[in-house]
Length: 185
Image (cartoon, rainbow, N blue to C red; front, side, top):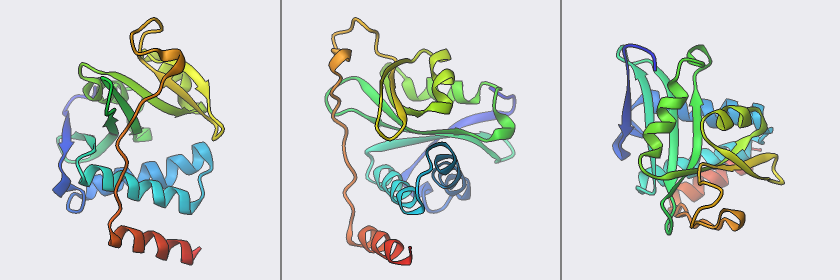
């Protein structure tokens, strides 16, 4: 990882008060996913709101990599499975300027802890995930590749991987925001 940098666990209250958090979430859902998967504006906005709701409700965690100067350089959001020792990576991004410096690997290691990881990677990220201990499971209809760090011959029955993850529960304000966004389209 880059000298003079650190990893910060983002708390619920940081979601609306830390501009770095908003910047990294917006960069991932607003720019990277449009580029990688051609998500529509509506889909990107819906996924952004879902991620924020999951963090706010304590169902997902976000780690932010920052320089000591406060500049955000990377982010990972993950959700723990309800029934297995596995964490799903929901979002992982490193600012272009700081790529190939171990930031992504450090975020991955911090999110992993003592659990296995699971993700749906855009095709442009598959090689990176393979280099970082993942293996491919299946190509998805949306163009992503399902990947995991679960060993091939594990008790988790990887060939028929069924993981249960918590889902966001939208309140009336969230639903109204999503409705308003749809009507703008």
